[in-house]
Image 1 (tube, helix red, strand yellow):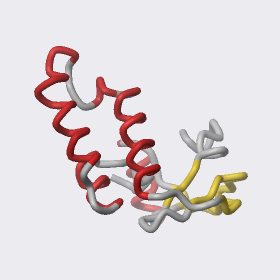
Image 2 (spheres, helix red, strand yellow):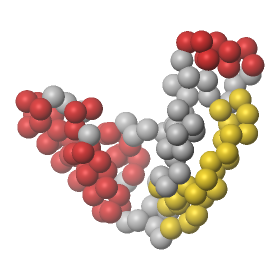
Image 3 (spheres, one colour):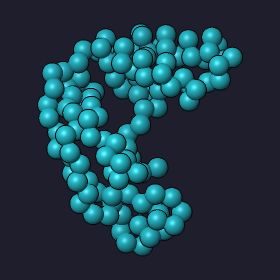
Image 4 (cartoon, rainbow, N blue to C red):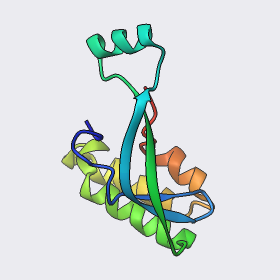
Length: 119
């Protein structure tokens, strides 16, 4: 679906060391699985595709900038992390942990960020 609707175009990718790129275009190269698995995926879920992305480098982000972006994203989509009445007991402590994370991997572990991998 992200491929059909061009949802990745404009998305920023950030590496664990703060380097980042913006996706300028995406092209499907073929199936991401052997044919038999691809057919099963097509019936039961969403088949995976191999893609090629055109990336444009951007200036790197500091860890504090990455934390701020992660916190803003969680606050915008807080319903995925907890119910409104659980905000103080679940979301606030989670965001506090993000604020004291010492690297991007810890933020990923805390938030379970999407990686566009087959599940």
